[in-house]
Image 1 (tube, rainbow, N blue to C red):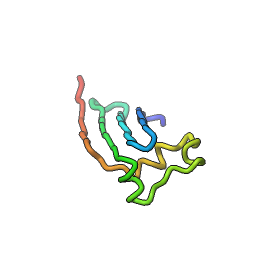
Image 2 (cartoon, rainbow, N blue to C red):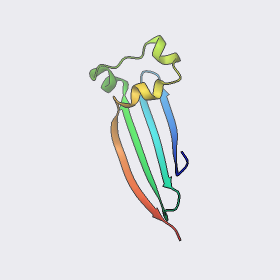
Image 3 (cartoon, rainbow, N blue to C red):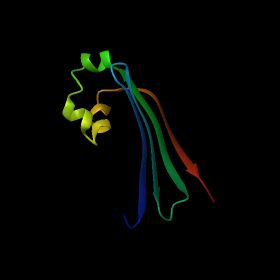
Length: 88
C-alpha cells in the first residue's frame, strides 16, 4: 500500500472447554492526512455459547493457524470503541 498503512494486533485466548476471547486493535492511516483511525474490540464467548451457535472445536480447527479467524464470527462483541486520533 503506497498511500496508507493498516495494522491488526490480535490477542487470542482459548481456555479449553471454558472460554474463547479475542482482543483486536486495528490501526489505519492515510499518508498526508493528520489523523489515525483506531478500533479496539473485545469478543468473547463460552464454549457452551459457541456450541449453541453451531461451532465445535475439531482437531483440524484446533491445529489451524487461522483458528482465531474461524472462531471470531461466532463470538459476541463485549466492547467496541472507535477513535480518530488527530495530530499536528
